Structure formats: structure tokens, C-alpha cells
Amino acid sequence: MELKAVIFDLDGVITDTAEYHFIAWKQLAEELGIAIDRAFNEQLKGISRMESLERILIHGGKADAYTPEEKEDMARRKNEHYVSLLERLKPEDTYPGIRELLLEMQREGIPAVIASASKNAPQILHALELTELFSYVVPPDSVKRGKPAPDLFLRGAEEIGVPPKACIGVEDAQAGIEAIKAAGMTAVGIGEEAALTASGADVVLPDTTGLNVAFLRKTLDFKS
Ligand code: B16
Ligand code: MG
Image (tube, rainbow, N blue to C red; front, side, top):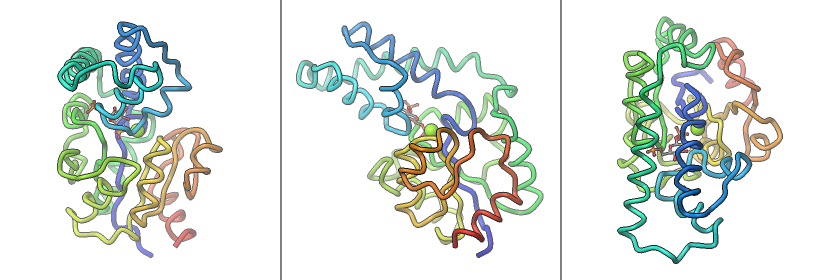
């Protein structure tokens, strides 16, 4: 099978915005009297803003304590804090090897797509000066279901006219790996091997330094 596209998650794969999400959620949770730690935060990776808030409220035993309007306001406050943290983002914050990989893909004519749950993805790519290296950024509102459903990844492949089995998806979150596999794509996990393998990752790398076109082609050949 020839590699025809690579569909990337953003937070935790292209750059470390996962940490900024954690800082902003932790502050909001503290204001609500709910303690969250990094282990709990793993469950929020790849999950939409409102769904993340719901999970935090359930975790704190406050699932039914607020009206929909109050929840909207909490999500807005968290996002304002998160967006203020994003002002620090610079091109050097791109994870190691990612820019080189995208440039290599461009030379080889392999399109790169973003399938992120984040409504802030275009702004993040702009801050990292990566916008031009992506063929398409899937708008999260354009699909019905978030990760672990396959919709974001399928929408990305459809937009550029590539069959899912010729795509590799790259993800740091368990929900994201499940989404890639449900889409019928080959999944490369970035991060902790045991958890990502349990979610169905075909291969797991500890970080992004090992990503290059030869590795991705070999992975697709081996798995298809
Ligand atoms: P926003 P990804 C996801 O991005 C994050 O992992 C998740 O923590 C966040 O809640 C979600 O985006 C929504 O982000 O609030 O910016 O719309 O990992 O799918 O790139
Ligand atoms: Mg992610």
C-alpha cells in the first residue's frame, strides 16, 4: 500500500499545548473546588472542550450542580485562560522533527492534514508558522462525533480524496488512537507505549524525533 497522506492530531503531537490545556483546566477546577492531577488529565486529551468540562464535573461529584448557561460560561473562561497561554507559543515550540517531517512530506508530494478536536488549531498553526505545510485543517464543528469516533479522521481523508487505508494517523491520546483505528487507518502513537498499544496503536514512539517518511512508509507496508 502506497502512503498517500498523513493525518495529524495537534495538541500533544505537533506541539505541547496539552500542557496549556492542563494548566487552564486545573485553574477552573480549583475555582469549583475540584482537584485534578496529571493522571486524570490523560482522560481529557483529544476530548472536546464541553465534554472535558463534563468529565471534570463528574470527577468532582458535581455533574448536576450547574445549569447549561453556567457550564457555557465555565468553558468560555477556561478557553480565555488557554488562549492567553497560547500567546507564548513560538515556532521553536514545534516538537522536534515535526517541521522536518512536514517539509520532507511536501517534497515527496504527501499531503499533511490536521484532525484536531481543538477549535484553536488554526491559531496554533499560525503561531508555529506551520499553516502553509498543511493541505487541510478539519473544522471540529464539521463532524457529528468527536474522538474516539472516526469522524474527524475520515473527514480529513475525504477532503483530500485519499482512501483511509492509504493514510497514517498520528496521535498522543488513547481516544485519538481509537478514532484512527475506527477510521480504518494505520495508527502511530506518540507517548506511553502500554496505554497507546492497548488502544490499538500499530506502533508507538516515545516522542516525535523518530518520525520521518521512510519510517511512516515502512509502518504502512508492514501493517497493511
Ligand atoms: P479547544 P487534539 C484537543 O486537541 C485536546 O487534546 C483537548 O485537550 C481539548 O479539550 C480539545 O482539543 C478541544 O480544544 O478547547 O481548543 O477547542 O489533541 O484533538 O489536537
Ligand atoms: Mg492530542
